[in-house]
Image (cartoon, rainbow, N blue to C red):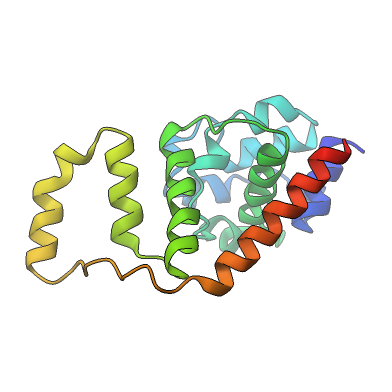
Length: 180
């Protein structure tokens, strides 16, 4: 199975419908920081350039706002394609090319496991701490907290159902690894 077929299978999108109008790239709020703009990423997938796509910053910087999807005249969903690329990269053991992203995702999952829901300030705080950016953002965080814009984290009492699902997924993955 080709890389393009893997992406299309995961995303449910036909990348051959993309005719490179670049409306997705023009609307993307993260495009200026991406090494491959959404249209370039779509083209790279069509060319089966797996390494280029999976090692790009684009798949990790996509915030799934779906602006690209809403602008596509062909009704292709580049956001779904980006998600599929992230999934494939993770499955293939590719380390995110943006350090903060892997730290953020780890904090996100840990927060869900602990609380059963996401506490945005906790995830942001952990990400800032582990990337060495906390000191720079403490004054703003404090102002937001004082003004009631950031709530204190919940007690780690919830999360039972998510924790069960998470542990089941880990067991399945461990089983799969042992069979290889």
